[in-house]
Image 1 (tube, one colour):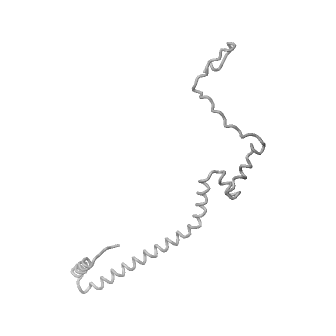
Image 2 (spheres, one colour):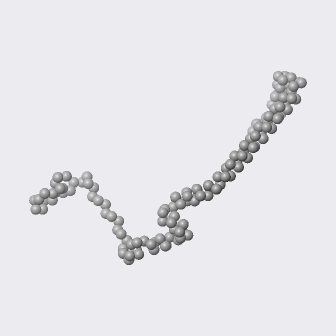
Image 3 (cartoon, helix red, strand yellow):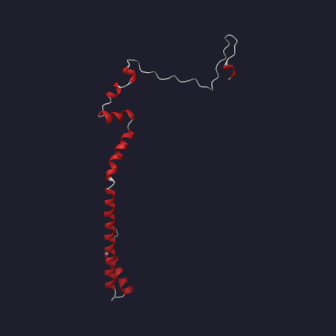
Length: 133
C-alpha cells in the first residue's frame, strides 16, 4: 500500500523525535502502532462480515440465472426445455393445422395503402365511395 523506504522512516523518526521529544516518543510509537493494528483488525472484520452477508445471496443467483436463460429463449424452446427435455418434436406434432391434415395457413396479404387513391369505377354510372374519398 505504502512504499516507504528506510530513508523516509529515518526522516519520520527524526521529525517525531524533534516534535514530540525523546521522553514521549516511545509512548507515541506504541499508540500509533496500536491504532494501526486496531484499524487493520476493524477492516478485516468488516470484510469478513460483508463476505458473510453476500454468501446469503447465493440462493438467489441460481433462480435468477434460470430466469435469464428462459428469457433469452423463445417461447417454443422454453416450453420444450421445461416439458419435453429440449425435444421440440412434440411441439411440432401439436400444431393444429398439421393435426387436422390441412395445409399450413398462408400468411395474410398486405392491405393496399389507404393513402393511394383508388381508380374511379365507371361501371353502371352509379354511386361509388371511391369517388368520394
